[in-house]
Length: 164
Image 1: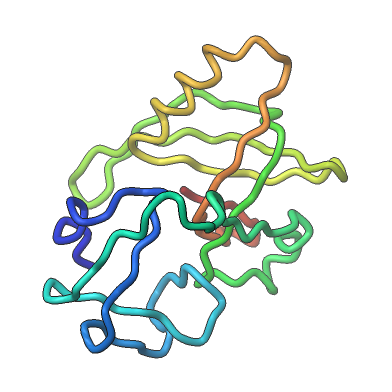
Image 2: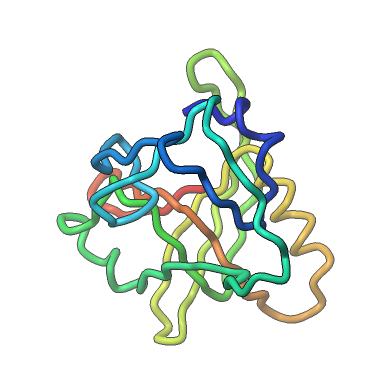
């Protein structure tokens, strides 16, 4: 994925139209899938992208929330599909640092709880560590509710953990 190629062409939250014949539609494949749909759109540096005016009706937020119960049995967890979750933060463990491939990486473990009192363990990596710590330090309520979008499932030693 060439994110650097497009970071100045797109603004998060805006809606765009892509001119016909300047993009491809392929089967949705790869290590991590952002949607369960069978196909994905591939845009290139030559793709013609047009900004749609803000006055146009289009939802501001699009989530595909997964139930925490989807992650109870490690044998049925789909590790290739990226998912969204919403939950109350009930545990925050201290930030840690690990070496991966010769690079130092920070992470923090949190536990979310849903309305059914089911819990989901999550690991936040990189910049999300400081974002989470800053967020919770400014919260005065007992337990903040957060949305994690495009999480990755990870089963390790027969236990499920989501990662962002």
